[in-house]
Length: 351
Image (cartoon, rainbow, N blue to C red):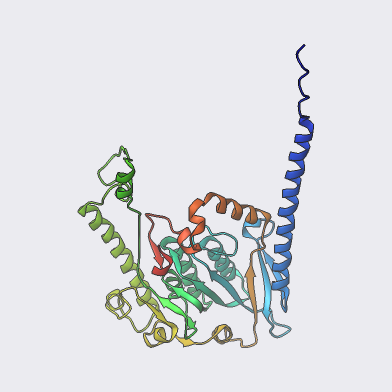
């Protein structure tokens, strides 16, 4: 007789185990998110008060206003502090320098009749050209509408950060701030030697000879190099014109391009003051005092805009880390840089 077959493992127990694991993961995520929210609220609420909420029920446009400096009890006037921290990208993660968020916050401040001045709390190595330009435009609109903007440069306020700051009415930098890096950069990776070593060859069908001019599997032609360089030079001239327009010491884009820092070098805050790139050496409190002075109300209260963290921010952050692959091992600035894009970015942030 054939011996009896061993009983199959019950499927129900496997399903239960899978459900338990899923529930455990959800509990961990919710607990982690709750902890982050509690820590964020505790940190923000320490010595501060929530003053107002903007954006209604739309989570994408919701702004919470926190009082960080008190004013006269009967005043509704205020100075708004807006963060520009991290690499400047069109779409940034939670609390990063995403141009969409920053531009919306500047627009909100501009449309609020009680906002008398804005302080940009800046710590950024720069970022995408178009993202920097979008923020620059909103800063310029604030100044044109009679709302003075003061930039406070923290550790780094270089390249795209300076592009944004150039539109402000006053710039305060720490004497040790890294700023400057006025220039444009674009890059790609050439892996033709690697392909030849492993016997791999790319096969591409294209509509024109320059359609794939930044493709890394082949060398660039002289015509392609000249074309890309011309694009970089034209964008650099735009940057220089922005600096000349915002700084009284420089009349034209050529003055900026021919200056000591026109080669794209970084400078300290103290050097920037000597070169006319900043107006004052100081700290955040000095920037706030200057904003109050420009507002004409020395006792006006000071508030900071914050976007409440959502559960989707946590999930999106985890997803981006998982999909980044080897790029997730790089520093944040290097991991965010995409080949074939123009950047106002500090050189040390690039591979």
